[in-house]
Image (cartoon, rainbow over all chains, first blue to last red; front, side, top):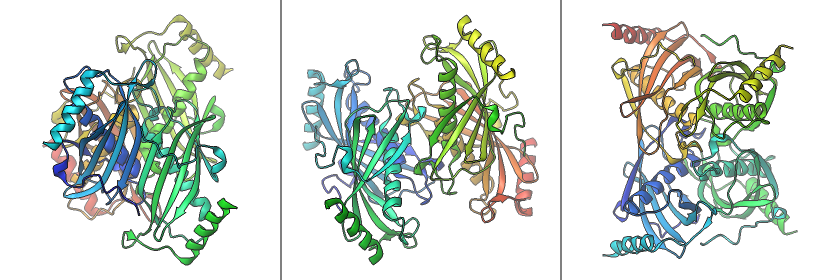
Amino acid sequence: MPTNKSIPRDRAAYTFWTPVSIRFSDQDPMEHVNNVAITAFLESGRVGLFGHIFADTRLPSKGIVLARLTVDYLHEITFPGSVEVGGMLAAAGDRSMTTHYAIFQGDTCCVVSESVNVFFDPVTRRSTAPSAEIRAVLEQTLSGHSR
Amino acid sequence: MPTNKSIPRDRAAYTFWTPVSIRFSDQDPMEHVNNVAITAFLESGRVGLFGHIFADTRLPSKGIVLARLTVDYLHEITFPGSVEVGGMLAAAGDRSMTTHYAIFQGDTCCVVSESVNVFFDPVTRRSTAPSAEIRAVLEQTLSGHSR
Amino acid sequence: MPTNKSIPRDRAAYTFWTPVSIRFSDQDPMEHVNNVAITAFLESGRVGLFGHIFADTRLPSKGIVLARLTVDYLHEITFPGSVEVGGMLAAAGDRSMTTHYAIFQGDTCCVVSESVNVFFDPVTRRSTAPSAEIRAVLEQTLSGHSR
Amino acid sequence: MPTNKSIPRDRAAYTFWTPVSIRFSDQDPMEHVNNVAITAFLESGRVGLFGHIFADTRLPSKGIVLARLTVDYLHEITFPGSVEVGGMLAAAGDRSMTTHYAIFQGDTCCVVSESVNVFFDPVTRRSTAPSAEIRAVLEQTLSGHSR
């Protein structure tokens, strides 16, 4: 079974954490959390990470959309309780960003995930190049990792 | 933006179709169908495809789990209406299967996706090798594509 | 157990029908469709009914919000398959409408439900009295039932 | 607009609290939390309350099902953040329990709700009378409120 080895599975790699409470209805007949709910957990982590990275910028509301999502399910997540979603900026392109996520339930890394998001013009509903301000924040965030 | 070029975007490549009605609550503030709902659409297609492939076998109930999911979001899906999820078996490994999906709204291919599913022993809750019967069905299904 | 006896359980009482396909992830560990998914089915029926009633009016977009929901769960709904949601206008008040719903899976009435929706001004985000045009349509729709 | 005046809107009335984090995908095009997500919040509170009340009993797993749900939507709930779901046992019948809930976002009571749950035999999939042990716990819980 192929898994994405390049996405970190240790907590130390992640720069922003979002707690998510598990709901009864997240479960399916397998008596574990369904994969669909897990993508909602990842979205919570993604929105939290972007809010953190772009907190002091004039990023337009609704200015980022998801283009690609990869999820590796490593261990079952079980109700009740909560998970923590770690996120980090992994790379930046001309019109897009790649971000990595890991979901922990207790000490267990249950899921790793990669997202590609594109900058989006909510008026034309098409991808767009981000502003110089946004680009500077992306570069600063990426260089912060390697220090 | 990287996308998975190997997943077919034409209807003819897919061997099983599952219609899914879009719900108002599938939408998010972007006024399109949220990516989380799209993974529910894909799961509908996946369960439908497996039901079709393994209809005449003694595959144990709850004998398949999702290990990896990749989703490329190509076009927005909008409420109201419905989508069609095409599915096909792309490859089979020792303990896993790779399947491909495309979601169409009307004539537009909005999403392509790849899943890796593993055969699962519901008692031990661990991956397992499928029976000879299941393996024969996988080979027959794969060879049917290339005829 | 109290149930709402005034909501019709026969198909003939309903004026608009919305089909909804059941998704694997609608199920919970009880191996039936979870009550949360059922409220999404009801919302599909509600949005369909309002679209039908107000099709030829200038009802503002986002001009109706849900104020009250009552759901009686009569029989389990099971995956796979689909349901049909019947809807009808039951009453109209100064700023609100009461609507009734029944969800059928095959010949079985599984759920009956009553909603109260209020007319809403999306700018002030407060309830509002509907226009004379909307009020006329409500009265016409209600009188059509009793003919 | 009718609302259920008998369900308390003050925090002091509730005996058990369940925190629920709000997810981006809980929102709809109205840019508030969709009513379907709110029923998932209520289910979290319900499962939490039952776990609390029956913690020391031999209540069978999957021994309670939802028969009736009433929800009054008083104020919008908005992303991001979390809510607290307060729950209390309101009444007990021969085969059923009535429970009350209030959802707070900060100091605002946004939702009140009443549920009727029936005791359920997971083998016959029918309602059943609870054991003497369960009945004693229900009476003790109800009398605790009035002390």
